[in-house]
Amino acid sequence: MLLPVAYLVVRALEADASSWDLILRGRTVWLAVRSVGLAVSVTLAAAALGVPLAWLTVRTDLPGRRIWGVVVALPLVIPSYVGAFALLAALGPGGLLDAALQDTAFAGSLPDITGWPGAWASLTLFTYPYVYLLVAAGMKGLDPAAEEAARSLGRSSWATFRSVTLPLLRPSIAAGCLLVALYTLHDFGAVSLMRFPAFTQAIYLQYRGAFDRAPAAILSLLLVAVALSVLVLEHSARGRARYYRSGAGSRRPLRRVVLGRWKWASFAFCSVLSLAAFVVPVGVIVFWAVRGVSEGEAVHFTWAAGLGSILVSSTGAAVALLAALPVALLAVRRPRRIATVVERVSYSGYALPGIVVALALVFFSINTVPLLYQSLPLVVIAYVVLFLPQAVEPLRGSLLQVGPRLEEAARALGKSRLGAFRAVVAPLLAKGAGAGAALVFLTAMKELPATLLLRPTGFETLATRVWSGAAAGLYGKAAGPALLLLAICAVPLYFLARVEVEEAEVESK
Image 1 (cartoon, rainbow, N blue to C red):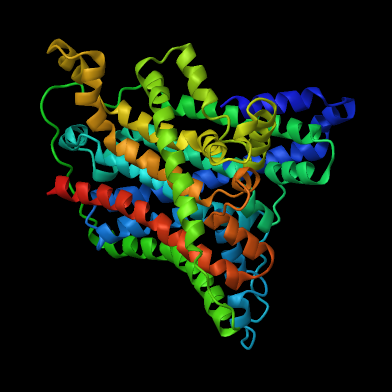
Image 2 (image 1 turned 90 degrees about the vertical axis):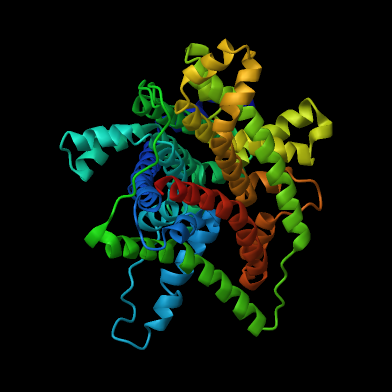
């Protein structure tokens, strides 16, 4: 995990005085302010969407809530660069909606969505499922005894949710917000297409347009510093409270909340959000495919690239899960200084653009292990470095809800430490492990810069096929791989979201 940071330090030490002056320039400060501002606004919006959606699909009598539990999570399968382009093609100047209004009184009245509004909208729409999935998992694991105690003392449903349920969900909310914030900081596709100046865009331009890469390394180190600040804030938000039940007895099922007059307003909220975050992007991709066919261009689903994507993404998810388990155990069960350091280090790659991590791995593989260069194991290592926090956060959230007395009881009955973990803790971590593996798999399926630089010659993934078609302006050619990518990613996401909703259904009964 420290390889990218070590690479940046090596490059930065090679810099001359003029390169270090880059930090003090007004444009650099302005880039930092804009990037942080975008990350804050996207994180707040994602939390404002994800938390209510989790509550509606897990705890209420929302009409069709089992279906909505899956549908509202589907935007996670759409790569940010595909989603941003789809929004531009549908709602931007000269897009589909603008063309449909040409012969009406509203012709030319659509606002320009590029810049901050477009970057904010696209990143919010395609990252809020991180908050939704983690909060839904955390909400299902709550013991309703605290809520029932608050209601028995005369608190209303809203007051109980605000003062009891929401604080108990703080680890899950903080984990989801952390993933959204760091994802926003390292995203390149959406901010570039929306022409929003950000740190990642400046880093990419420095790496691609300048022979001297020292300024890009310095900018990347600044991005790491910003990410560390985000981690400190998340650690403060998490607090030191206990989130497991300390009393004896079995946990009672969750009580379903009756929405009453808010039922159809909640239904409309889910419908509008799903329309904007999933139906519109998928509709634009289908439009590309149909127009390509009408122009005589065949739609190729590139099954070989699909198998290649599944191979490296599933391997990366498995390795990331194995690497995340000791990190989560240290952070929750042994919260000492060394554990804090290990946990912070595990986030170092997630805050960096994929091209920086890829160049770092290229540098070290060529100089230390040449056999790894342009090999699939190096691609898997890149995925682990980039996406390890997505496996750590769900595991940590699950561990926070597992009381240590369960392990102590198993040890008292003669189980070894490993035996107690295997018999008691591991089954309770299964949900968090599944969520972490699914998140890493989904994100790795969409990853582009590191895959382009590290893949073996001739090896293709669906993300590289989509990018090659879109970059050449052949959107019909990109439509087939894009649709196949969405279909493959929808399978684990469907089962992940369906399990959450079905288990909540069983418990509420």
